[in-house]
Amino acid sequence: MKQRLLLHLCCANCGTIPIEQLEDKFNLTLFWYNPNITTESEHQKRLKDVKKLATIYNKNLVEEKYEPDQWFKSIQGLEKELEGVKRCDKCVKIRLR
Image (cartoon, rainbow, N blue to C red; front, side, top):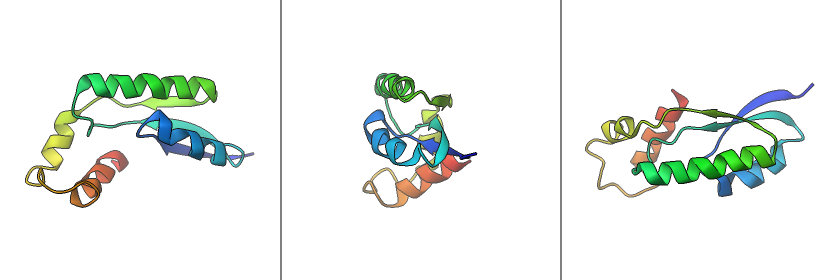
């Protein structure tokens, strides 16, 4: 019996390789929670593609509520920081909660 693994996806494009590399070893469930996407229209566009990916690979998808206020609150004072530095730490912590 395969162990279960919850795989966070930031978008469908970034999900294909990990799914293909992990699906033989784990019982995968896909996880969608991205409060850092600043516009609702972009969030919905990415979510639509992630849902399509979950269907293609026949994977369950856990979808969390879109909460951009959580993101903006967590990065208060870091708005001018470059991507890949301090804001990323905040983003990871939000998702792990």
